[in-house]
Image (tube, rainbow, N blue to C red; front, side, top):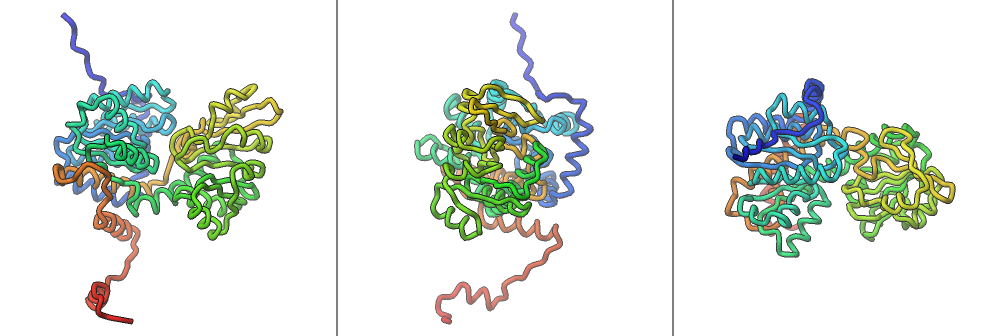
Length: 425
């Protein structure tokens, strides 16, 4: 007789870290008043009761509050890591030990473990997938198409993930609704710009302890993440250069007071390079060859392919760990290139990710997007859907109230004027 295998309930580094993790989760909650109100409502209303849910996210103190909101809502949720270096092991332990949420995540897990965790998540047969880069959705479509029938929909909060979802839609394989959380105003205006800007420089400083003032800092990409990174780098005294492929964004960077150069020129001038494009091989061998000795390279876009580390690794004579999350590649030319966080998200690999105050709004969008998918099950057509403007505005209103900020309201006469075409100048 063959014994029935016991399903693994969690896979974290060490449950003994739970007490520390719970303390840090509670600290983050001080800056997350919007999500706290959603948690309280969800606990009363149970809008996700009985829903099997998989969340593939950075396992941080902020994500913990999203996971708690989902559990309060009645969801049967499983959490896995979206990035091998972003997991905070004490938080993962606390979510298991203190909140009873199955977590499969360990900081530094290899690609094989990461992919195995995706399979474990899909074994949960999710009705809703919260994705961060669309790896879980892509795996579902490619390897388990028979499970698509279980799916109510998915939510996605990264630019890279939305690009992949649009590619799926163009290829005719996105046969279920996907909520575009990334493009909600209360997400990308704040999370991408202020969160990425501050946390990226936090990660760089923690990893290197260098002075940014006076350095030439090259920011590759001038989307919302690039805008925030360039702004914060200039605020710390950096001489910021922007590289772009989009002419409109390049003009915007010029108008914002930044120098704009092709990477082939910027590579000779930069002391520090930060990629925030979401694309692959933004920094390549021809750029490494002309960089200054000791130039520092890091990524704050999404996947670790923005920097062509494979080519750098193959050309290096030796690689030395010089500080935590900091590796120096010694090249045949006698020069060296320093890479932070193995080319993965430096703000999460070397620091703690976005401040909880901005993730408050981002994760409020995620929680409400899940509720929206359930409320409109069978009504939403396959494809990519925006967060309703009313939800976006409600989140902003709750955030302002929590900050003690009051705003004006339109008078009846103003409302009439704005809705009329007969009133001239």
